[in-house]
Each structure stands twice: as structure tokens, then as C-alpha cells.
Length: 443
Image (cartoon, rainbow, N blue to C red; front, side, top):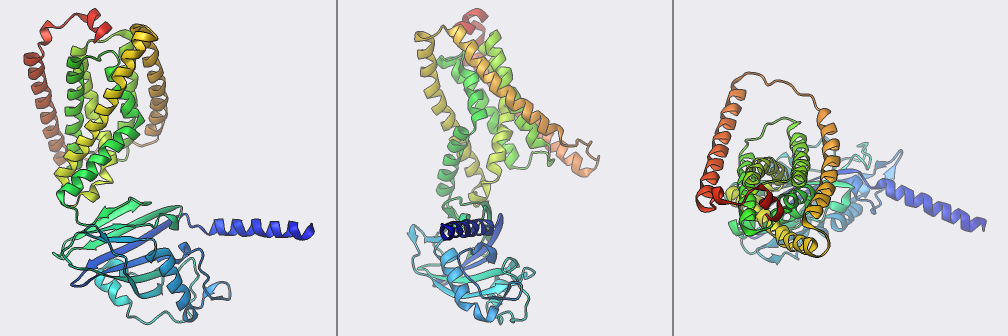
């Protein structure tokens, strides 16, 4: 029994040790460059992330570099070469060769450029008297993949996420035309096209837009708040289209830099998004006219567009040179997601109000529940917002330039609002719609 208990304690201790060896933050640097018959893949990974490879050590844990060749090779194969997938056009490159692998000091700057990184593999290995701990060392690997044509479309599916609890990968692709594409992402983003064609960017960002609207609970609740009392075709067209036009304007404006470069702006927008849910829910409870709601939807759409832009900003790096195409595709994906919500929500609400509860009482109850959720978000986000310091901007040339850009944005917003008003007045005959009591009852 004593032996069994001792073994169990040893096993638990070992398990804890292995768990503690998983690094919290890992930053991986990679460079890819194709040439006439192959593509070089240069990778730099902290050695601390190579958890199952034993390296020879001496003294307090210094690496015996002259005896580490086999361990270095094993780490390069197990944790790098077998984890990543490179593709030429649609074909995976299954053949690869580890040309060189070496240990580097944390102060080494050779990966600042491709030429320096490539040349470093010809340098002699670090001497044994280098006092280098495993958790300080960097593993540099050069992998060579045979290819058919250096002008092909290349893509990468990195599998480095499991190297740490939070893994950040930087990918630099040196195109044959001299252009450099830089990507930086956390975890594993899936297939990354290193020089995407327009249709690749279009499809990716349509999918991203759909996923974002379906994953964004606050956006979904706002859309549902919009349509609870107004579920007929004409009100839906007016309200949803005004919301769409508005968030499209601020989404595109944000992508072109028309966003204040201050830390408090994102939490301000998130707070206003929560406030939009609360306001719209209370308006449903007290009664609303859709001729007024499309204007309110336009105003809140401007806010939600900034919210969409925060999610888009991290993924625009995958657009390549197709920025406008990607923006339009993302916006299209958002609209598809919204339409999917409307197609599902409107029949469900109609059935509920016909068979389970009266429309007025159901509107009040559902809106109250949505207001409760929105108020919870609003209070939390407002508390986070108040933690930021607010300062008046300096009256310099940069401020004046920003002011001019915002004036242009306000002009575009005003023009869009006027055009929508003219369209609704001429083609939807707003002046002939039923009165408030009729619309608040049927929409």
C-alpha cells in the first residue's frame, strides 16, 4: 500500500510538473519565400514550448548544445514540421525536408529580415560554455518544400495553437513580385491564403460576416427588438434597410481609418450597443410607430456599424489587396445573418402571438426580458468605460485633420438619411399609413 501511495504521489507530482511546463504566452515567427523549385519555411519558436523533448543539460539546467542535435531535430519534426500544412494551389505539400535547425539566444535579431534569418543557419552553433537555459532558448528551423511553380497560390494552415495556452503566430510571406504580406493571429485561424484572389477574400469575409452576426448575442437581440412589433413586409423592409445602410456607412468608414484612435472608443460603442437594446425594448413596451422606428434604427445602426468594425479589424489582414471587396463581402455576410434571424424569428413570433399569448402581452414580456439582458450589459460596460480617463484632444494639425474626416462622415450620413427619407416618402407612402394605435398592434 505504501508503494502504491508513493507511486500515485509521484504520478501526481509529475502531472503537475508537465502541466506547469505549458507556457502561457508563446510568440512564433515564420517567414515563407518561394523560389524556382521550392519554398523556404523559416520558423522561430521558444524552446520552452517543446514539452516532450528531452535536451541534455548540466549544472543548474544549462543546455549542452553540442549534444543537442538529435533533440533539436526531434523538436523540429514533432512540434513544427508535422503540425503545419502548406498548400500549393489546392494541393497539400506533403514532401518536406528539414534543411537546418539550431538554437539561438533570446537577444538574436536575425529574424528581423529574411536574408538575415536565412544566413543565420550557416553560422556555427552556439558554444557549450553559453549559459543558456531551456526556457530562454529559441529554436530556429529551416524547412524546404518542393513546389511546381513559384507563381502558384500558396496557403498555410498553421497548427501551432497547442504550443502554448495563448499562441501568437506572425507569418511573413515574401511574394515573387517583391511585395510582403504580414499576418498576425492568435490560436489557429484555419487556412490562410498568403496572396488571396478576390473570390477567396470574398468567400472568406462573407463567412466571417455571417459568423459574427450569429455569434454576437447583443446584435441579435437588437435585431429581434427591432422587429417584435413590426413583422409585416413593408415595415420590415423600411426598418431593416435603414439599419443596414447605417451600419454599412460606419463599418466602411472605420476600415478607412475614420475611428478615433483612443482607448475609450471601443468600450463606448459597446456601451451604446447595450443602451440601444434597452431603449428599443422599452419603446416596444410603451408602443411605437414604424414611421419613426426606421429613423431610430438608422441612428443605432451607425453605432452597431462601429461595433462590427472592431471584429473586422483583426481579420482584414486576410483580405490581401482586396480591401473593398472584403468590406462588401463582410457586410453581405452580416446581412445574410440578419435575414436568417428575421426568417426564423418572424414566423416564431407570429405563431406565439396566435397560439400562446396575445400580441400585446407577448410584446411586453419578450421586450422586458430583452431589456433586462441589455440593462445587465449596459451596467457592466458602463462601469468598464468609466475606468478610462477622458482628456480633451490637443488642438493641433492632427486634430484638425480628424475633424475634417468626421465632418465628411457626417455629410455622408446626412445624405444617406435624406435619400432614405425621400425613398420612403415616395414609394412607401408614409403619409397614408395607419395611425399609431393600428401600427403598434399589427406592424
